[in-house]
Amino acid sequence: MKLMLFVFILFSSPAFSEVYKCDVGNKKVYQQIPCEGKGGQFDLGTDISIEKQQESVAELKQEMQKYNHKKQLKKKLWDKERLIRAEENKASAAHRNANANRAQAHEQARQTDALKARNRIEANKLLIQR
Image 1 (cartoon, rainbow, N blue to C red):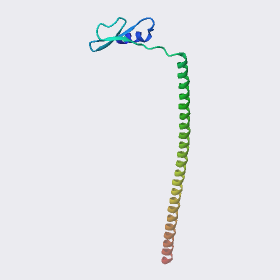
Image 2: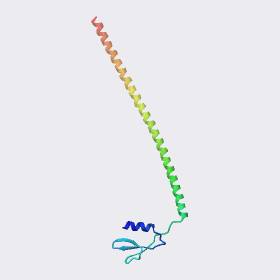
Image 3: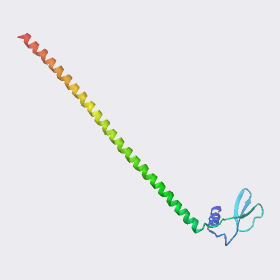
């Protein structure tokens, strides 16, 4: 009920009727007739002039342009940051790959040395057995 009355007040023109804000119990009531108890005439205000509306629209457009510009700058910065991180990840992967290749080469060299040592021992055993 209050909502319907409030909507009615919003869409009614102050030129056609007067609105009163009254205290009934602990509630605020809006009505077209003067209050019996506490309350008084409620000023609905005046419409905003065309010039002020146009100024507000222009101001809003400027603010939106600034906001969009900042948003674009943030996106560019984020894109640059993402590219830098991708390059760092690439470099890190290459470093890990190089370390793995070194470790593999070291292991192959150790196995080669172990096989050479084993072959020498086997060769010495064959010489001793003859």
